Image 1 (cartoon, rainbow, N blue to C red):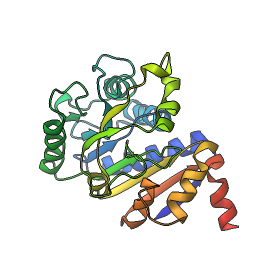
Image 2 (image 1 turned 120 degrees about the vertical axis):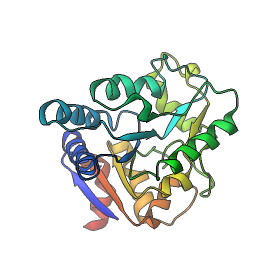
Image 3 (image 1 turned 60 degrees about the vertical axis):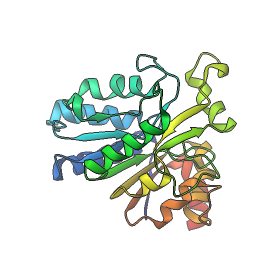
Image 4 (image 1 turned 120 degrees about the horizontal axis):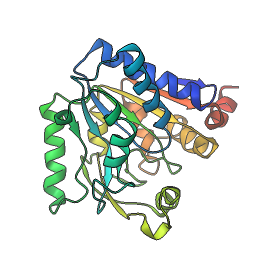
Length: 246
């Protein structure tokens, strides 16, 4: 595991974008696992800029998003489908048929989950999986006490996660309580993983994930067992790491 402490959000985002761009340049038909939320937003902006100014080519890239809220239509501005198109896909040359996002309006959740994992396998697996981390240590929507062997599945969101995501909604009552998420097993099958952490509120979760025991109570701790993980931590999120190093 490689840990990089970035000098602020801008530096973290640029470093992350460079890793993604390098992956795409070296393997133009890369399969990317993509995350949403506030943490990777500037990274996507940097990649869009690289596409327009430096010709970074996404025409053969295949993408799979980590998760989607259950019960939100694609057109809902709080859906991750809307987030990805508004912030990234509409601004690059990725083929629409290469974009995969769980269907939050599915009538058969189990079938949707099986379909999603099957399509990942058919594409040869994920080459580079991008992750954020929740204040409770979740990755994707895999909340504490999740089974490490889980593949893509329906999850019930912890109250801490609901509260954290309420800032994106008009009222906390509007935050969905369930989602479809890649499971830990699906994530761990990625060839490379890039974990991003921004803000002091993530400092404790990063410390527990990187330096304490591997436990379902901190889902991100399982990444200690992966063979190729890069963790980019914005400076304020690294305070416990720096104290440990010191």
